Length: 89
Image (cartoon, rainbow, N blue to C red; front, side, top):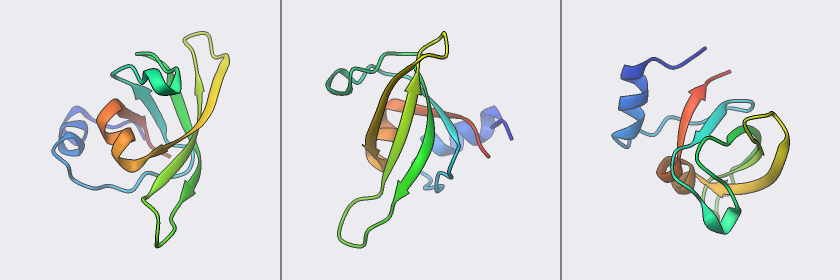
């Protein structure tokens, strides 16, 4: 399911919608400490939900050619600050 513009806007207004495995996100602002650039796309591979730790996601990122460039963990806050959800499973 591709998200409509209105749902994307809803997400930007801090409505907390849980991301799912295999959702796809796109980097909207560079994340230099993770070596990620605008336009890089990532797929949610794992979701970390520990009671004593912040919600986080293991994400595989690819460049515009589809080449894997990074597998990294981002917190829920980082995903919401730097990324846009472009596809929901």
